[in-house]
Length: 281
View 1 (cartoon, rainbow, N blue to C red):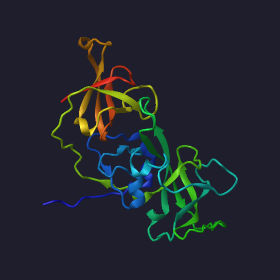
View 2: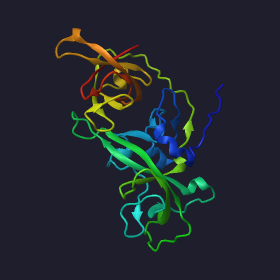
View 3: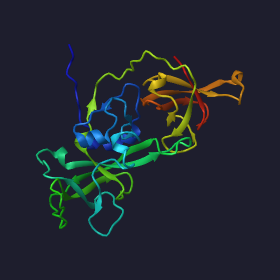
View 4: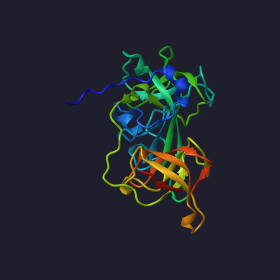
């Protein structure tokens, strides 16, 4: 008999710690609550969360098809300022009417999107979305601006805290989108990888990376890659297979059909684009 799933909201107090908490093995995952959340928090399967404040959206998903800005709520200036931080007031086109019966319905995470490129691909593979702050509806302010669309209205918000200066290219994510889901995350697959893989990109867009970094590899679910698999990082002289020597390990944290994301768990030296990995059962 299935047990009911337990869910917990991520509180604003946790925001100060999010950059310190890194995804580990069977860590909890996200559950979208509505269409807006589903578009932003992709994929809906329990393997999208990379760190406590960052996740990855593939380019072929709904949230990234039209552009590299997720369909979240916009941020507009409330005065002449173009950069904002804690205490600043901003405007946004938010859904109307807004249910203000719960405090969480008035609180938003400020999210920053960053495209992830691979030299071997002409288009970005996707984007990372990172929480950089929080904002709340400021009911004391009634903006003079109006919106002709009946589905949204301009509302004023105050930035509660931010880890970087906020700009108009950032977006607002309803706090209620974030829930913790305790479903099992062990992979189920009958196919095991047999061919080596290569690093094709890093999530920070650098050519060289090191321990604890996230990298994209050129094999995915179609090749038998599954979450929580361990792969070895290999040094090898060109055209000399006998020279192959492991210098580190990486664990798979997110899987797509044709590529996957791995976190380097140990390395004696830096890895780079085109570094080889082999499956280590």
